[in-house]
Image (cartoon, rainbow, N blue to C red; front, side, top):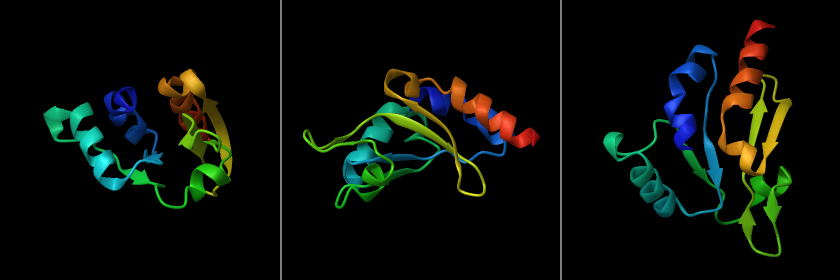
Length: 108
């Protein structure tokens, strides 16, 4: 998330909305955001909680049912709601591939 925050201006230029989804509670996400970006009292993009039903992480296939956590993933969804790119695991931390996809979609 820190890398996405650092590149937030680039994503804005690509006409992109960034947000995070986690299975953590709203208070936990607020604290985590503030700890990650204390200079701005939190990230400048929304963090959404999928804490109670975990429907989103299940629907997107990134929920580890056995251990009860959402796996790290980055999805690029176009304006029509079509998933155009998925990065999972450690590569999801780096915003480069997501930014590349967003830039390509803007040119279409």
